Length: 433
Ligand SMILES: NC(=O)c1ccc[n+]([C@@H]2O[C@H](COP(=O)([O-])OP(=O)(O)OC[C@H]3O[C@@H](n4cnc5c(N)ncnc54)[C@H](O)[C@@H]3O)[C@@H](O)[C@H]2O)c1
Image 1 (cartoon, rainbow, N blue to C red):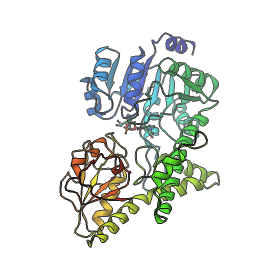
Image 2 (cartoon, protein in one colour; image 1 turned 30 degrees about the horizontal axis):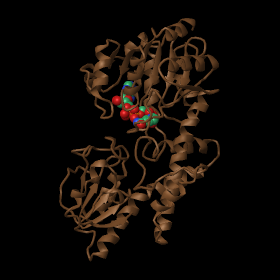
Image 3 (cartoon, rainbow, N blue to C red; image 1 turned 90 degrees about the horizontal axis):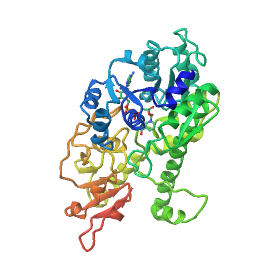
Image 4 (spheres, rainbow, N blue to C red; image 1 turned 90 degrees about the vertical axis):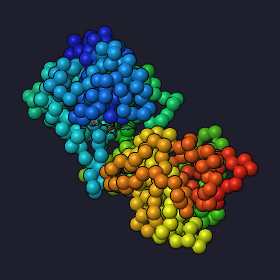
């Protein structure tokens, strides 16, 4: 292992990153920019080809960063997993989705562990980055790697380090967000801390991989529960004719002990709607019900139906029915100003509108054509005629007052209309949802 530590210290270690998606590509770039030779692995030849051409397929990662990394000669991508043998450190950044009954699906992690096992050699460090329940690294990944006959801690090292990216955020980067690392033994923690410390601003070592796995889940559960809280309060305050947005603005002037969370049309993205259920599933195995997680999930998943209910009411006030109405949903991304529509509540809103007989359309500058998702395949393209407009995502482009010149009714799930500078221009009727 001394050789591994020396290679990390001198930045001559070869780093392999498996999965070149939203997490893996920026991670590979950070290590390349720190001076390491990096190989990006992916099953998807389109991603590998794009990287090889020096192109980026993720909007927030500028193509110039990929081009610079490739032309430095230190970054290459491949679908050939035999090259894992050349890597001193291997990071796993593959998806961890949910199955149809909200159960964890670790099959991508298992498949990747088998690919590594087929190429494992003594002296390597393997780090799992994919979000998962505690114990995955220490039992499932370790078990697959040890089927080779090589022993963890003696022949190879193994750790978990969670990805904490917040897509679209400008004030923190992959490099500057503190990196938690936890090994399955002290040497693994030390090696992983040395590796990430060579490329990132701050490393936070913890006592074990299970702690690192749990800390990531705590962060996401914290968000899910607090978002559910304000979503529930929104519905309650609505009945009392109180604007929840104004309440939050007032509460957040407290300089301590309060952190603002905002209501919305439901949860989206690859993390918050999915990850908490990894823990509730695992908790059941230990005879415990993760009630906060389940309750938050229940409240948050009901939000799209709440928004559609508000559309129905608002149309009704104008003597119209949802059936036959043309409704335009603004935004497919799950949050403002990013090109990520995974798990976006907009899809569910569109489906519910259509189930209610409306003719639904959407408009999103980031998605000229909607993609087929895990659950939803709305198959629509933007069209510009409508009886009501639903604000589902607060993209900056939707702040232009000219957009609303001919709009009569806006059902706003993001409080966006309060920020549109209408001046003396005609305002549409706005119903908060
Ligand atoms: N996107 C985020 O903001 C974010 C933030 C924190 C944590 N995470 C977690 O990070 C993990 C990865 O998420 P992501 O958003 O990068 O996913 P992604 O879908 O963008 O990328 C995953 C990549 O892995 C590839 N892949 C799948 N199976 C593979 C295999 N066996 N071998 C090689 N490549 C394989 C896919 O082709 C894809 O390119 C997940 O566990 C997720 O929960 C994501």
